Image (cartoon, rainbow, N blue to C red; front, side):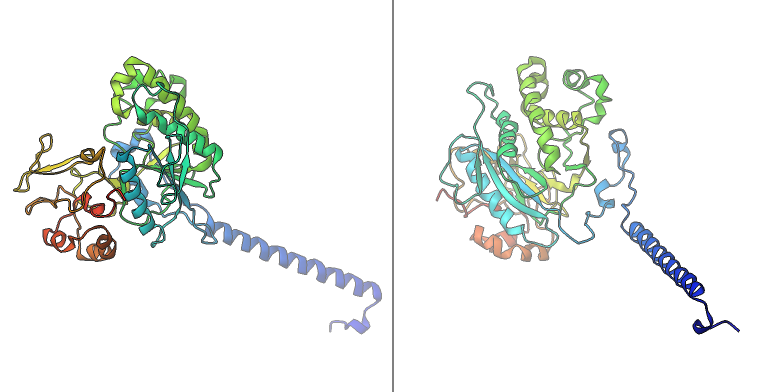
Length: 400
């Protein structure tokens, strides 16, 4: 029979008390350790075999599709700030007004991680749309430095904005005036990688001899340069702060070099960004579903952005006449000095799916009210069953 507490000596009682104390501590530590291991296991990042430049051509699926959008354990969103550089030209201005309109439409939508918006105006002075669009005024490059290639003001404008502006978000989406956001955009970047659209005409391997002037061999194979431009790209703010000055200097150096200037032409600044990102060791998830470019891309699907950079030309039978002005056409360059007018003509019946279209009634209904604000021709638009980029800004901004 075990002794009771009344039968124990004071020393035995003390020893028993110590034993209970250490036993309690041991149990507590064990529970804490088990709990810690469970939490670590539950929150450990998934091991993804991210594609390197040498393996991208062999991919059968888009790498981003495999990756869940990263969420913290608290469910806090990883907001990004949308930034668009522009001049004060009529051409850039109407595009920015349309772009900002559609940004506002989707900013608070499902799965959106869209934060603030800034038009970085590199004219050096305010314009009359400062109250309509959140704007940061940047100084242009000194006269003559851009050599007539106004896009060189873009990296210099970003350098100024990143140095002087109070940017609340930890990520940046670099976009362009001729982008139309068609659905809420989540933060597609992950694990220190940017998220970027791959352009078929950015070919680092093809121009290796030229690029070695800016990306020396000790930096690694030229395939470390991603086939991207600076837009659309979602990237960490701190990474962009490091890249932007290099992007500016590399782009200026490229423009000064006749061989490079001739090789890259109007996409020179895009190569400048791709090289600079690689020089700083910032890789990118190549996300082909980031945007579409009509008339070559055939449907909206799961894309986030429409880039209406190419002209769309058709005859009245709906046949594409690219390279030849069509009987029906839309080309943003037709409105370089004037705002698009009201009642832009819609494409003729029979235009095939090579023009981006609404692919389901639900999609059309989703945009009904927004489209109503932009066009008085919704019935005619629905009857055609096709989508033309011009309907996104027709009847909305006409120089008010």
